[in-house]
Amino acid sequence: EVQLVESGGGLVQPGGSLRLSCAASGFTFRNYWMHWVRQAPGKGLVWVSRINSDGSSTNYADSVKGRFSISRDNAKNTLYLQMNSLRAEDTAVYYCARGGTIVRGVITGWFDPWGQGTLVTVSS
Amino acid sequence: DIVMTQSPDSLAVSLGERATINCKSSDSVLYSSSSRNYLAWYQQKPGQPPKLLIYWASTRESGVPDRFSGSGSGTDFTLTISSLQAEDVAVYYCQQYYSSPYSFGPGTKLEIK
Image (tube, rainbow over all chains, first blue to last red; front, side, top):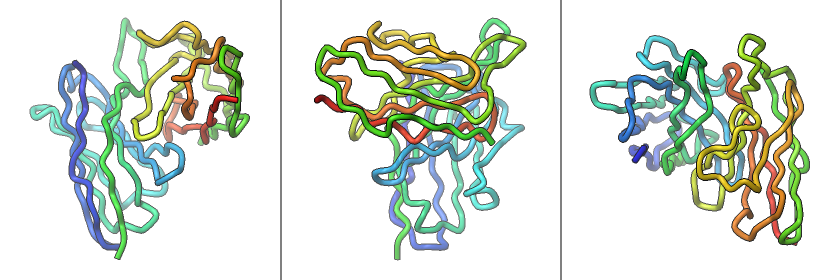
């Protein structure tokens, strides 16, 4: 079964740091791009960051650029999100999601599956 | 950046009736070399993560009931539920995976009338 399990969320003060992890199983992790997506309470989905299959290329939403860092350990089948200088507006459920790969020469890109999410609350 | 919009914001449909949700991208998400639209639809029920329904704008994910269908190309897309069931109550999001940032629409909340 393809599965993603996030961990590392919690309550942190403004200006603090947190590292999220996403453990992957049931598929060849090193072949896929991976993403982080967040959802503030009662709000919609917002893409946060993406990393390519070997970790050599990353992208970030403008709202987190310079504060968040995405990385992966393909030997451990694990995705990470290092979050620094946290703000109240970063409060959200953070989901990891499996992204694109190459299928018969075509680059896919939809997000599937998603983990259950981990809640990050930034408050004093 | 590609901005995604959806209409309506919310929708109430009777059981067994058709539900239609529209999605528009600010720029084309049609990849000319493959003739594929980089557009997906997701369903999110309360307290659950999003679930992929449709990719390539019109390809139904395995296991998704055939009452769900996607259509459109370029910048205008539609998700149709042909005969609404009680379990379809959810928020539906479109998303472009054509280019970073991989933006989502604001969501459409679907309820039973």
